[in-house]
Length: 110
Image: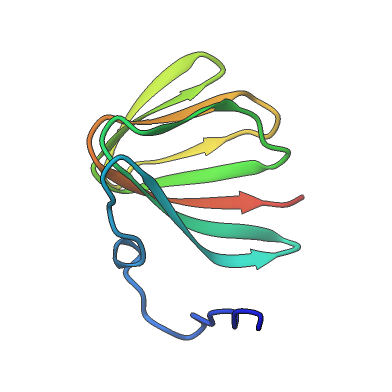
């Protein structure tokens, strides 16, 4: 039986509460998935990360908790809770958890 799609519309949400840290892991939870874009919340354990890759769309990354090092086109951006960065489409980027950290990633499909 297919899993029912979660509906978070019209709810007040603290995105930090939507994913829990797990030792040695990266946990994700997709909140929105439409033709226009996606919103996903991630929890990274310390020293976990996403290796360098590209995406076909612009992405907005906001740090919800902790500290991360974001690399875009070989330039490093130290980030902390509350910081936001736009990662341009088709430009190599990577994510590394300096401490345990949570982020919200918004992909704009254009």
